[in-house]
Image (cartoon, rainbow, N blue to C red; front, side):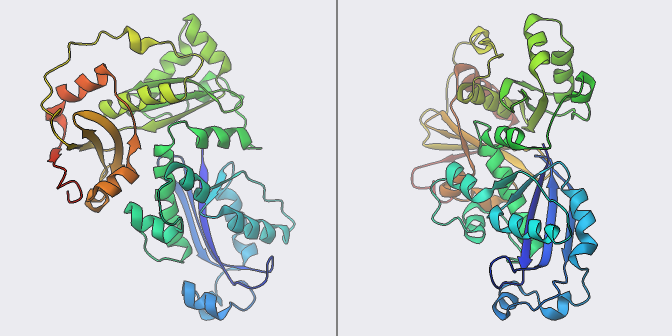
Length: 372
């Protein structure tokens, strides 16, 4: 599933008379930015003085910039077969769509707005403006009120929302609502370009609903096993699968936690109750049970990223990812970045058996919890 995460700056003025002065688009596949387009735009009209002060985009800056019709083809290319994502998408999409209408082109895409998604998935924030959200979540935001800076921050915010979306409503609604999205290819097409990395795999039906969840150290190999397998269960999955998505986890522990919790939150019809068949070892001695707060950090999904697990009195509370130490320098920020979860005896023992594999084990008292 591809997204075009974008932001625009405009001249201001009366409703439906605004013209674009700057645009930034980041094509995003759910894990990485795969294409980028950033440009000033000559609006061919005056920019309101207060808008020039707010954005820093002046009349002189756009005088020699390309006009909208000169960048239109590039915008069509980078947004092809994507869902448009923006912070207050109604405004950005309306202005872009009207610019295309003036050229006689029907610009039609499904849309997602990071404001209502944030309110649902991070409900305790004081403000949902992009700037204040980024400060609260520790997301870097440079060039505020410039298209490139705001769009880049929206990419990071959207990635966090995907991580926290345990029910996978974002992906499922995107697939279902997309007018252009159909997946009627054969098994070989479903297997194209899958990564050989660790993560959780989601099999979707024609409506985007998740029908099967699995995890693997090699997404491509495990998907191939399922889509070419001859068991009755695998044949049913092959028949009903129209799309495959995945999320990287970086470690087997996070993959186990993520899969288990998503099977609970969103039980797919083709998953068996295999977790109950796993032979659970006798619970290990637990040196963390009497500790107020324990933060375990380890390998992330990409270079420069780290993962973390939060345990309270020895019980797993959640997991998350961060790129800057400032994002985990308070319990408030940790809880905002964290995806809440539950553990089972298998996960409990897996964490204890793998303690030596974590990069850091931070044991915090009640008094220290706000100052990591």
